[in-house]
Length: 324
Image (cartoon, rainbow, N blue to C red; front, side, top):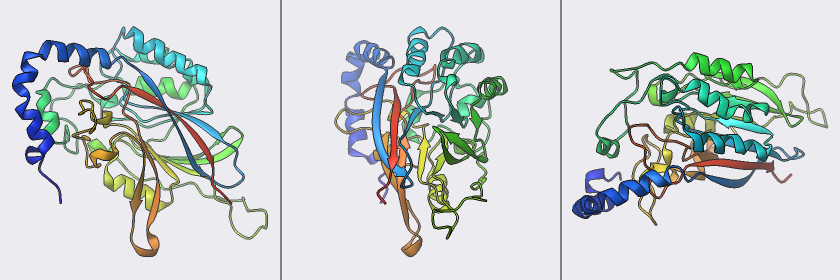
């Protein structure tokens, strides 16, 4: 049973505390402004590769929401290259300003020395708009489709910059790439928050067989989406993905300490708005469960530049082989 947000006991508690928050509003705003720049690296390990595959290190970045002259964010992004990942996965919402692309590409230049795969989010295509921040708690920030009042961002320039550096565009596409000397299949979708997703399926496994020569070998399958809507997670899970990477939620952005997110800005359960969890789809014999990694993101909309109990993050994921 879904409890309306207005009836949620934590939401009621939040409303009751409005007066107290108003008294300490300046301090709370100062804290939220400070926390949005407390960048962290979360490390995870997950066994999703076929037996015999060597470990692969993946750096997952998402929701940078870059604004010109964000010096601390720029330095931190550049320093992530010191991790020397085998692969960088970028799950979108890179921009928050129409003049952000040069600074974003400069910040990411050290990371673009490594293989990368990316998909866009709505704030790659369109600039955020000024709105009442309390509306965020009423449901997803927009319905499917292009926003009515839109300022198109220079996403084509950004994508060219990524592709010129060798990063692969998984927007409604599939392909096989060699990562750390091993073959991996990728499938990605355009932003589900805008209803842009079109499923491209998976690459064929032509010409590859197991050691006994009995059946086609199966390469690991990695899926990417910006917004982790359930319809997209179900598709990827049932189509054979081994793992899904997503962003969009900001981890709830303004969370309750000890509880977590009140909203996910999509239909993903709030308990999965940040971190490594699992997703199950299908019924009976077709039922599958796979790992789901959702990033809390690195930035915020420039019109809501705060975080509470939800620090910005990148994820260093060590992918290992499953037991034979």
